[in-house]
Image 1: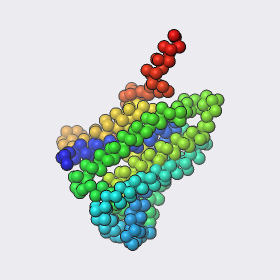
Image 2 (image 1 turned 45 degrees about the vertical axis):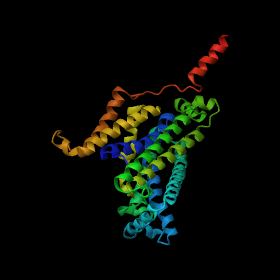
Image 3 (image 1 turned 90 degrees about the vertical axis):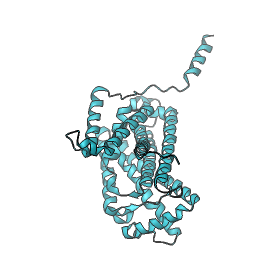
Image 4 (image 1 turned 135 degrees about the horizontal axis):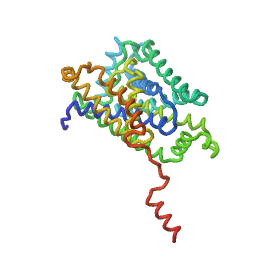
Length: 352
């Protein structure tokens, strides 16, 4: 397999996961106009699904502990190594458990979106944003302190469905491109969804709920549907990240990385514009990875601890974007129901 530098791999995987999460956020914020400050909630649900479900299914198939004791670190670490040996020699089982886990993650994420739709019906703007943010923190605290779910403070290892492809560098290259492919498929799905009647209804609700109601749109249902779809996609992103890293520890799923960074990506690229989101994620992912990779060199150049530089960068970027380019790099453009060429043909036929 072609040798790809670790730096490039890091940029690609951060871009792929960031794109999935930010597209889900853009659906809820850029299209539906919801103040989604709890993106970490659905991402964490997806990671919990990856950490809790596939390992228990495989352990039960092997006749090993699959209940609450599965999450105990002294059992989990040895057990997952045994599971990975089985997966390494069984590509069909690896693919099945990978797809099944993503389906479970999407269903649980959609369920969480449905649950959060209830306050979304009654609350507006800042109140809804704070409520969603609190939901995310609450789930993180539970997962971090309740051992039977995903090992509490010790975390759990996640079965590796990519082990059958190879080990070491080959495994990470393959996993990166598989996840990147999934991210591209989700990008295409969101683009199609945005141009559909559902996507146009979301934008109508965002621009004027009163006008949308006049045209017969059910606002509570639209809000709920946007949250369900967005949360399902974010949960898939969380599950993919857990699979890639091979472990799940709740404390790593915090609001900074999984809520505020996606907000910065989206604002930089252009809220409501999926291509802009892609550019914003790519720019930020590249800069963040370079900072992390060259932090030792940066220590001798700048008077700031490089460990805090990426946090400063995100905060500064958000402030500057709001001040000088609130529409982002690529502002949202009107979406045409029909291709422009077809509209021109219709106009010409009417003139004749």
